[in-house]
Length: 389
Image (cartoon, rainbow, N blue to C red; front, side, top):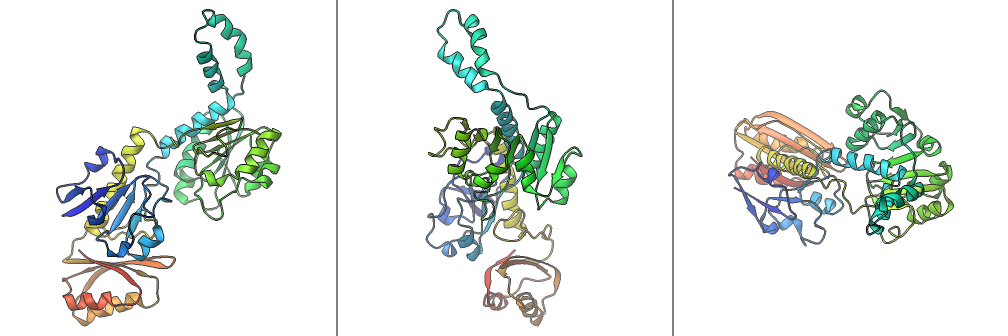
């Protein structure tokens, strides 16, 4: 029986993917698996290595609320669910394009303010001139980041008649295949800054991307550019943003992240982090998170891990499967296999993947190793976690 804890409200559709071998408990310190959305886990446990915890699944993409390094060192897998909420965010970005180009919010606010006017129909005809906007058809859109969300945005905007330019130096083969042929793939980010009327951000927050939209970037952009940020607030340098709005360089900034520095700025449309807030997205993320967690707990397979490499050995069919999480140190794998060989245990299949400083080895054997063999493996330098399935 595996014990699972949920730190946030997780869709019942996802939780229904657990079977009778799982118990949903309210005690995270006693759980082998934790499901989380936005709950801050950084101060939740003093010593993760003392826990029975084997994995954490984030029902969403961002994992800044999870102590990835501490969990890695304790041999705890952290999953996320990339792409599960992609359509929801795509739809918000398309809505943002329209709200930035047409002053629908201003018009709606005018009507609310004049709701008691008995002649509101006539008054509206006179007032609507103040809310004239522009159309997005034929305008140039720059999509920075062509992952699960960016490629959907690019294709949808192209279908709406926009001239779309995409930038992603790490464009995957699958993403490239999914992109419309009409999308212009740009190798130089500065081309998007110089040429596009609208720019939308779809990259993670890293040391390389923090503040990527800064004073220098604004200096390259067209006057009256519109920027949409439903990715991460830290991608945009806010003092530079304020200056660009004041000068008229930036016409509108639409963001999903409310910060004290921008919420009062004119020309800014702010949402309370609604990108993935749809019933469908929450269900998709929960289902993916639960399925990934089950596959790891039952088969040792790792899919969409954030702090370890992915490694898939299929469904376990042999007498035993060893799942070894270890540091990426030379000769570690040979020490594991030689230890088994000395005891006459045959390895029927072996999968090994590394990612930076850590690695995963999954070994299917024809017998369950005795305790002394497992103890010997546990003593190997750099070993983080040994699981016997």
